Image (cartoon, rainbow, N blue to C red; front, side):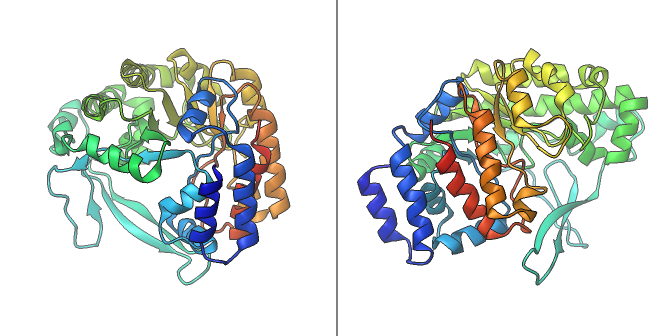
Length: 399
């Protein structure tokens, strides 16, 4: 960060919490000698940049509190102030079939799944909302022919690719020389298991994995066919203007993976390998999100040339950054590890600082690590801990 940048931010932001603002800005002015894109690319290549790159995942409620705390009207201004090195471009505009709103208030998504917004903690400081699946349209399908005849399989034709370069250029113009992920939103983010669970329902999906292999293969095959063509067209349309590809699923529980290695290999590994190979054909490193304990599946992902494993839920079994970096750090880069289950919501700012110091100590050597939390920072997290998190990123992230 240059002296001009420092002056601009100091004059742009209100006087509220000025000491805390100046602390972050002064640390950045001391630590930074590279652009965000240079820093991120170097870390992903397992090289040491000027400081550990910073990513951010937060709920809308935490986003608003952060903007209020630091005095910003625009989220992008807050990201630039905090030195966040990544942006997520959601992809081309949806122009497919009309998505219905049903009588119960739920909305049909592009997969034909019904979702309804549910509020929790209404009126309380920790309140927020989430989207609940209310109808899994393939729950009653019994045969492969039922799967084939399903009328709502999405199509790659449902997206407008012509405007992609302009969208990315507009993001770049606003955000600067950052590292841009093509990430999609929760409906068009490449996955294999999650769409199947939405379509079949969780219980039926797991019954299928154990007892109905032909149903699983039919559904996952349709999912892979859609995402492969959608991603190919997106990569073509982006014309080299994005730096990486972000996809995600949820393959882990608190104590272990959601399935055996044998089951993963049978149903999902080849499809995931195809996803990674396609991105690599366009020169894009791949970052993969999964919650939970997935230690036993990591060698499977290394085997198909995954670049970055994201989330690192530290309260889940065997997912501590120190052990993962020691065992797999030569083959994988990592993003995440910040604890949103205990430290951030229930700890003190000192606990947060100690957590970040440990993440940096284990993750930084040799590159291959990106600061981030194990998922979105949730509304039950005190803003003082969010402030401490970003101060610590800049204090302990310097090489």
